[in-house]
Length: 265
Image 1 (cartoon, rainbow, N blue to C red):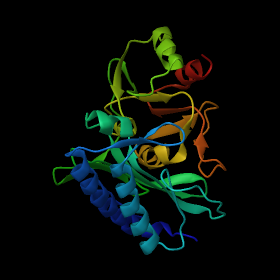
Image 2 (cartoon, helix red, strand yellow):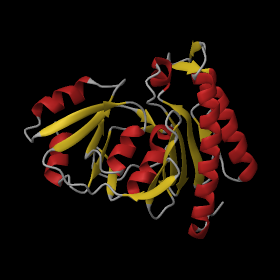
Image 3 (cartoon, rainbow, N blue to C red):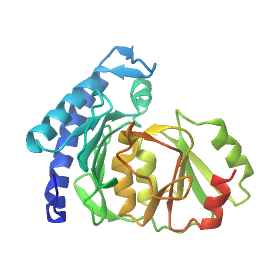
Image 4 (cartoon, helix red, strand yellow):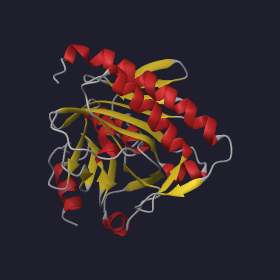
């Protein structure tokens, strides 16, 4: 199925509404006791993951019956379309279980291997970040504003994963000679912090899945930032196993020499 860029704003509006419905359901479960199960890969699973997934997938399939929906909680199926949705119905399940508020709903639209549209909502705060394919926005307390990552500061601010901080990243941070500060944050909120200029760089070593990053990639792309793999090429989508390699999210203030230092460490 082909999608005209003239339709991007209408599609984005629909995705925003769907993410709000899913977030509302997640909060209903979050504010009560809930059971935690284990998936085959030993990662946690809650009722909130499943009910959010049900809301999002059914809504997308009804509104866009010709566009495949690939979700973390659905069995991966073979597909040939160049256009598809990537959904993480509850990104940061560990944060959800720990009740620290750092979890999100992620919906991205991929066209020709590039994530073009994306919505990330933080259910606890109701804050929503999104890209309409041209610009990136933040919606907070009924206020909508365009965001940009171009916020120069005296020292680099690096955001890293709260629950998946690996030894490579820990050792790399020790090697960095540039004056810098670090911040640990859960879920795809890290993409949002770079997109709105609250951080300069987000580094993730190791494997993630495409539904973890698709919405964030779209928001980054239209906020004067980039998402690179460790070959310093734009992160691509639609791989056979939907698995990402290591990646770097950075704004335009990060120079190529520093990126090469990271990838060669």
